[in-house]
Length: 156
Image 1 (tube, rainbow, N blue to C red):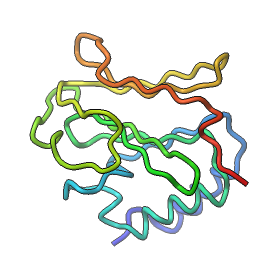
Image 2 (image 1 turned 60 degrees about the vertical axis):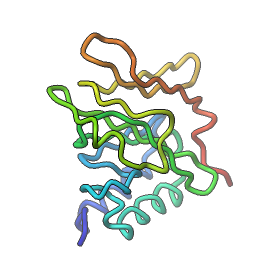
Image 3 (image 1 turned 180 degrees about the vertical axis):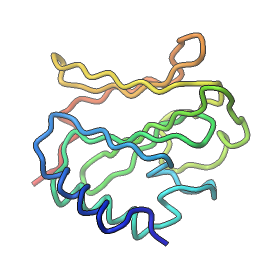
Image 4 (image 1 turned 90 degrees about the horizontal axis):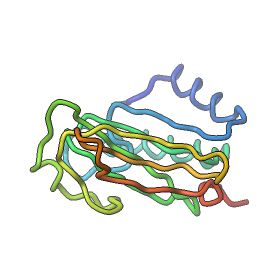
C-alpha cells in the first residue's frame, strides 16, 4: 500500500529543495499520530519514514504539518533526529467525536479537544515564530502552541 505515487514523491522532493521561510505541509489524514487504528500515515510506515527522511535530507527547516479527518483537534510532535516536527490536526467544523479524541496518541502535546473546531496558523515575522492553534465555534482557543523558528531547524 502507498499513499503517494512516484510523481507525487518527485514533486514533494523538488518542493523541499526550494528556499522557503516557512513550510506548511497539508495532509488529509494524520501524519504523526497512528495508534488509533484509523486511516493515517502510520498505517503505511515505509511512506511515513520516507517523508521524514526527505525532510531531514533536504533540511526542510521551519516545516510544520496540518491535517484533519478525525473529528477532534490535537497537536502532535515527533523528533526527526534533532528536529521537532509538529502536526496540528483540526476537524470538524460541523461535528466532533469525544471517544476518538480520547484514543491513545504517544506524540500528543497537551490535550485533545472534541468540540467543533477550526485550525489556525499565525506567523509572527517580527518574533520569528509560528503559532499552531485551534479554536471552538465561539472563537475561544482550545490549543495554542507557539514555536520559535530557531527551534524548527535541522542540525548539521
